[in-house]
Each structure stands twice: as C-alpha cells, then as structure tokens.
Image (cartoon, rainbow, N blue to C red; front, side, top):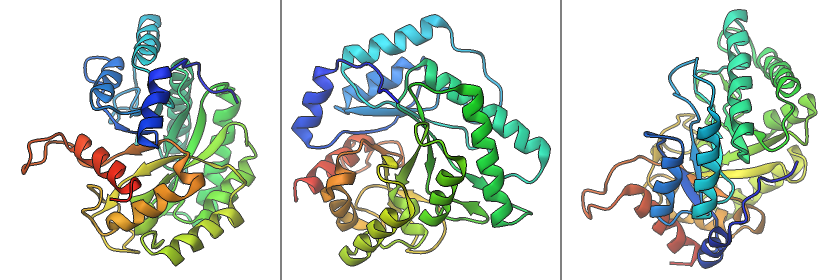
Length: 306
C-alpha cells in the first residue's frame, strides 16, 4: 500500500533533528487543518486526529474544500504519517446484531474519510465481547473488518488494530489475540497494529524492565507477521502493571516511568515508527507550558539518554 504524498522536507528535517517522528492527538476544532497548525506550532513531526465527532455515530461527508485545505496545510508544515483514531462508540465484537451492524457501517465511513484525506492509518479498538465469549467476539471482529475492507478497498490508509488494556471484556490485550485477528482477516496490505505503551503495561507487559521488554518483543515476533506494528501510542500509565485499567499519564510521571520509554525509543524497530501522544491535555501548573510540549520534550530527552 503506497504512503501518502508528502514531499515534506521540513518534516524529515524535524525528524532528523529529534531522532524520532513524534506528535500527538490534536483537536480539530475550527477545521481539520487546525490540528496540523497546532502540531507544527509545538514542533511535532506528525499528528493524530478524529475526522468526525467522536461521540456521535453520524457525520456530514467531507467536502472537497476540507480535503484540499487538509492536504495543502499538511504540505505547508511538512508533517508526515498523519493518522486518525476511530470513534470509541464502535464495537466490532458486539454480540447484539444491531450494534454490530452499526459499528461496521461506522468503521466503513471513518475509513473512507481517512482514505479521502490520504491518512497513513486509522486506529480502532478491536472491541468488547460483553455477553458472549472471547472466541465469538474475535470472530465478530474478523468478519466485520473483512466486510469493511471489501467496502472501502483502501489504497492509502491501513486499519490499525490497537492493543488494549483488557479492561472488562475488551479484546486485543494479548499479541496472540491480535495475531489471530490478522491471520483470520487475511488483509496484510490493509491492516496493521498500533502499539500503545499504557495499554501494554496495564495488560501485564512490564515494558520498563529490560528482560520483560525483550520478552514482549519475542512474543510480538512469535505472534505477529513481520512489520505488523505501524505506529506507537506513547502514554504513561496511572494504574499499576497488570491492572487491566486504561488510564493515561504524562510521560515519566506514571507507573511506567522513564525507563520504559527509553527501552521503546532505543529499540531499532519501534524507534523507526511514528509515535503519538495521547496524554492528558492542558498546561503544567508548575511551568505554565502546554502539556503536549512538556511530554514531547521529555520523550526527546529520554531518547537522548537524559
């Protein structure tokens, strides 16, 4: 699957200067392109957005002007590897037929929007099986994603299944589950994985311990096809190892701490991937600085061995 056209000399220079392509999930209030402008102002190399209201099922189609402004603004600021996150309303593992059908239809719409914007990825949580079972839920996800691939016929944008913390009946908290889905769906050119550090830690992967981090990488090699991981969500965790609770914290200030991010950013395969912050928004009360700026600087310090 080809990457979007970027011709982004400034984006590549920014990545070369920092050693990593880092960004964050940014607000699209005032227009999708506003996220790019906000990201560039904080010296980000990439950006993640919602292409529609995350709390609503329906949305207006993207206008040609919106798409053109998005692409021209991306080109102007030189950001690379832009992605979107799908609505949290979507549950592809839902046993209830009405919710499952609604979820598949919503995924198709979001994926089509990501294609129109020529985004590199669309991140989605696999789903929760609720009143059914893990095998049934996994099969529902596989069927739903296959249907979405047939409807969208993606050319630019991969669907990125995100590993989860395993809260409640949420699926995708082990690489065995994610590997099963990739094999069952059989859409290698259309799919990938987004690895979330907070979710991995909460699911029981001690990524802040060198031997356990290495063990996780061996599990990834064993369970996932080569090159499956396409993006990183870089978040610390408010909750302890194996808590199965998804609560993001600022970089280095949570249960993972600096060491986990040092290991991630030092690994040759993971360090080459674009990374996106989903840490809490606002300003640091001690410095008055934007939290995204604080977290990005901390990641860059950790990557530099500080």
